[in-house]
Length: 131
Image (cartoon, rainbow, N blue to C red; front, top):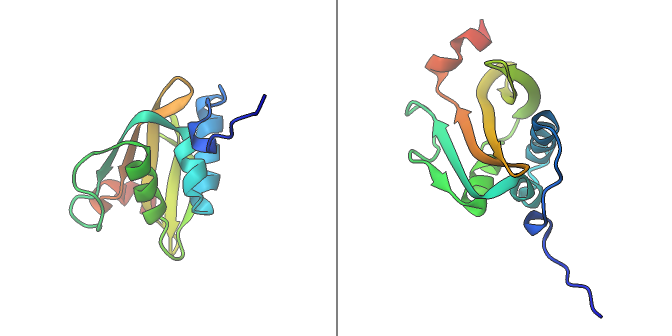
């Protein structure tokens, strides 16, 4: 009997805590590991980015693993780091560039994967992070 090999992103997600999944996302974003990011996303994921028109990102919600993971990798421009943080009392990630928070990420989870991912890159909404 032969064993089929499926890509890592298509295998059943581990049932880690929200904090563990967010920590994995932070690591995958830091290394721009598109496959690892896809593995953390629900098959019907929606990515919502609030840039306030200040950042060159998708202006409408994106659906699907490929589109969402590509956009998350694209956020990691040169000099951007990802760090774990508590955002509105939930586990999240801050994106930092030149000692300034340029984005925050939170998510809702379903079946051990991220079902909705919110990214706020709007500088107006990040002012309190950069005082």
